[in-house]
Structures are given as structure tokens and as C-alpha cells.
Image (cartoon, rainbow, N blue to C red):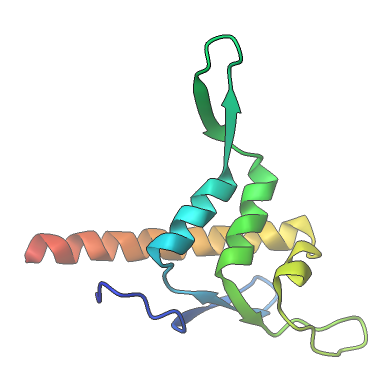
Amino acid sequence: MNRFVNVEATDEITLANGDKVMVRQRLTAEEDASLVRNLMRLSFDVSSGEAKVTEGDWHLQRLRICQTYVKGWNFTDNDGKEVLCGYGTIAKLDSDTVNEIAEAIDALQKTRKETFAKNAKRR
């Protein structure tokens, strides 16, 4: 695997109803760091001054994962017209769709990391 991310490389996910979603294969280090910041919640204890990092809201995490990875789809509106994929449009999807896409992205990334780890051991 190349150490530099091809930001144009995508994988196709087929949803349960047959719709297709194109997702990024990999994120750059900067994109990954930004996503992690969006997935976590930082709070401060005023009395001790200590910072505490916790997982953020699960539903918001799923939405942010989709907004980061999804690059396109074949979704249509009620009139059968193509709906353009974008950050704001992803936020308007129903939660079941967001969860289905996010779970598929998680599965793809898990497989990619396992493959990378196996290949690294062979070197």
C-alpha cells in the first residue's frame, strides 16, 4: 500500500435496497485527525483544570463518518431526479441510511487495516 493517499480512490457500497454509495478508500493523516476531533468530546474540570476526552454523541459520530467518507451516490428524490451528494445533503438523510452507510464504511476500513497489518508482517 502506498504511503501517500490517493484522495480520488473510492470503493462502492451497495445498500440493502440496491442503492450505490461511493466512499473514500483512505483518509490523509490530516483528514483522519480532523474526523477524530469531530468524534470526541473534550471537557474540562474547572476545579482541577484537568481535561477529559470522551466519545461524542453516537448519532453525530455516524453522520460525521458519512460526511467525511461519502463522495457520491445514485440517490434520487421523490420525482426520480438525481440528488447531488454533498456535506449538507448527507445531513438531511434519515438516520437508518446514515447508520447503514457508516457501518459499511467501518467494515471496509476494518478489512483494509487487517490487510495492511498482514502485508506489513510479510516485509
